[in-house]
Amino acid sequence: MADRIVISGMGIVSSLGYELDSFWKNLADGKSGVKKISLFDASSLATRIAAEVPRDFEEYSRTYVKKRAAGQMTRVTRMCMVAAKQAVADSGLDFGKEDKTRCAVVMGVVNTGNSSIEQDTSPQNTVFKSMTNSMPAWVSLEYQLLGPSMAINTACASSAYAIATGMQMIQNGMADIVIAGGADSIINPEEISGFNALYALSVANEPPEAACRPFTASRDGFVIGEGAGVVILESEKHALDRNAALYCELAGYGLTSEGYNIMAPMKDGEGMAATMVKALQNAGVGTHEVDYINAHGTSTELNDRYETMAIKKVFGERAYDIPVTSSKSMIGHTIGAAGAIEAIITILSIKNKTLTPTINYTDPDPDLDLDYVPNKSRPMDIHIALSNSFGFGGHNATLVFRKYPEI
Image (cartoon, rainbow, N blue to C red):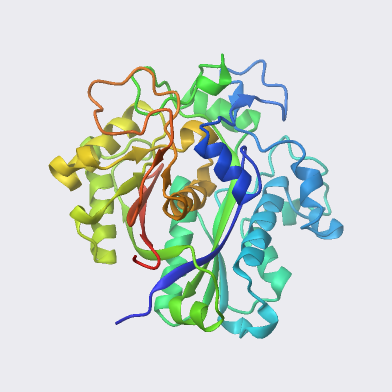
């Protein structure tokens, strides 16, 4: 039997905090991280809200990132570094005791955040700040790792692809340890204007906390979030040999391309359904075994409708018995970081035996009739969970997590 892949450490930076415990408490309490944009003057934009990482992050990050290196990184890359160092510390890894040629880094990176609002960009650091490979490079440099180091861009599925790629590396014998995840922020005037032109963003600016309304009749687009999420992947044998404390097993994944439309998902959720089916097959999991789905759940008309249809296609009548949540209702859509951040939420849900809520669920869409865990968290012993990530361009990913140990 092939060695299992396990999660031994995690790190988070988000609008609801940068420590796993406080982040989890805010999620379980149903708090929203969405507020009026403070990073720049958004008064002329149709969308004036976002789920920003709190402004004291810069002070917080100084304990994780050396001053000279920080000056060559964007704020987003610093988020990645903080989450990565948190994850390594959480795992108890000592890279001085590891074969560094067998330690890899894979990050989902849509962009580095070197936008019009980035501070202190100069001719001396603009190249370093703009390099899309900078996040995995800086993490590898931090620990002097010598294994594969790469960035993956598959839009909103990027960091889920990074985690799946890390799993492949360990299964293929290329690595014993993979630091995987991603970071992102598109909270800037040019990208908000661009998404407004596509009618993709919510314009329900008042009150900000109520704007992101997945699976409701009044949903009017996604709310931008920002942050970073990083996990440590190891083979089960490697982790047990060093007596690591383990969160759960990464049981499998499904990766697909829809080949359909640059923006819209395949009609009736066919591509989403195919991705979940592939993930279940890869994990060796039956539809009757799935306890919970962390949905992509963007609060857009098509995603929420088609993701609901896809779940019904895959699970049939049992779909009505599987709780489905959208954490984007609280932390917004973190784009390239979404797959990793939502994987962490799924893992914490398994560990803490709790489903976090889909908040702002006050006016159900009659066509969307699954159990979306409305407004309040719910206790549940979860053995198998899916985490969905679906991106522009038809890049789809589903990760499958299993409780560890299985008791």
